Image 1: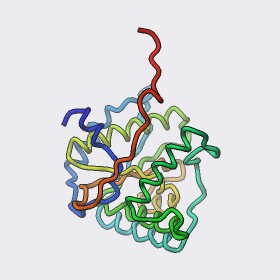
Image 2: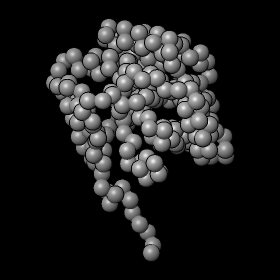
Image 3: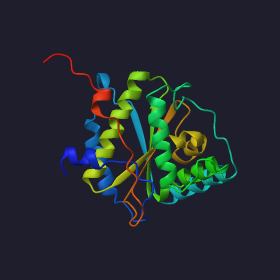
Length: 221
């Protein structure tokens, strides 16, 4: 699989099989991802790879919180700006509609938040979840670095025939995650990334993208 195929086939999968992912593959991907760029070569990220019983326990605890309609831990950073304007609000709304339809959850369902949280807290059945942390002393530049690192990881996973789903939702249950992985108070959870093989027979969601002309401007020749 070349890099163009990896980029084109990468999408947020929300239905994983229970087929295990070998540690050798995970180590190969994460070792190669150390080549991801970072300003000043700080390599500010730290990734916890959670599988097996620790992941099962995390899912149990997080799902219990979700089903109890727990509002989650205090946010350490906003997921989105307080006021989304066009075209961003339009893109958000369109993608949300596609996701809800794929998950068979009606947008006007009063139990929608709890149902979505419960699905997320199960990592959509994934047998592996990566949790990316940053030191609290890091600034906006290093958050960008973390994003480039995670994108590199997700593309390398595609090269191995695996899929992923980045989940900022895990920050809602950051204290539960930290208890499982042993992260200290000097770090902040950026997001989790569920990893595994896609479950067969489940409708595939591929959200649309803005045309390049909306997001790219050529200046010069």
